[in-house]
Image 1 (cartoon, rainbow, N blue to C red):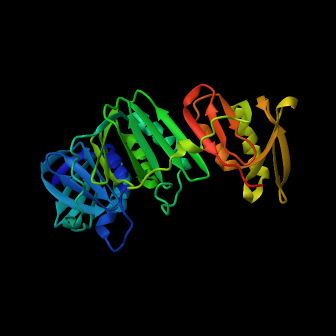
Image 2 (tube, rainbow, N blue to C red):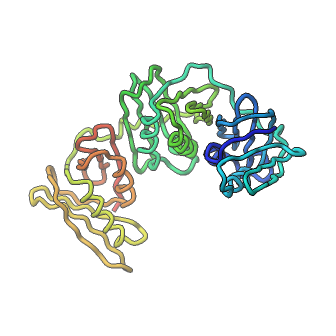
Image 3 (cartoon, rainbow, N blue to C red):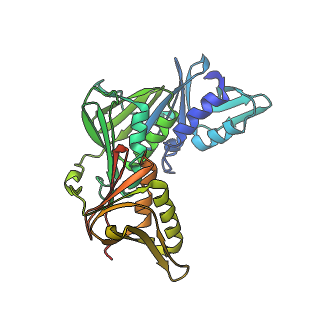
Length: 365
């Protein structure tokens, strides 16, 4: 193998591929990036649950394949100051040359690299890249970090009538983002494990293309766009029928500025101690909306903010993080807090953002 390329081109591809590599010492090939110089230069990586192929620009003089540890390769390329880089294979190892520098990286037998899933049947969903990225980012924090229950440790994606709906829940809170006019022509639904969904979001941030194609084949999700092909296993189970738990009416409702509510929670976090509990106190007839927090070590606070209130008086407690996590996903300056009543869920929506809905359960005290 012999080729020349630019530092930026190959480093960007390496950094994306490196995130997909595995960390199992018993299988060194899973910690490697495979450089396959054929018609194009293709970088490959896998951790057995997800895999990636990235086509990057290179002037190929001689075809060949080599696999080297991803971390060693990325650190080496980062340290090079010059823009032009030459890569070649010398006695089976990767030789990297540039102005004033020469590095030889020991290779791992590339024949041990597992075969990545083949290209899907073509029955894919073409969707706007930015819409898919927004859908993932708006809900990912609400999924469980554990896969003990795969349905809760995944992000649910549904495409119907050109609308993408992404949903995640850990059973304590639930986030739903609906993106219309996605450009999708085919309908479908799937469950993507959270860690793979986060990798997919990272890749989408670095893909320079307006649309990508999603396809599912043999329990594998494949995303193709901008010279990148990412594949991941999907979860073969049903997502909870979450529509049934969303309250249809509100016993108490408050409309507040998102910035005021965020600042109130930020202060409450300081005084809440390790339990991160905040009490919300709404008295519509008195036009009072107050938050309280107390810690034996720090002290206590009680802050009120301006709000448009209606309904019944209510005292209710929440985990501060569960309330604050969703605010960056609301594309509106004002939010509506719809309380179903004591011990019942709170639903948060943007006043001018009907695309997002967030449900959170109160604490039992």
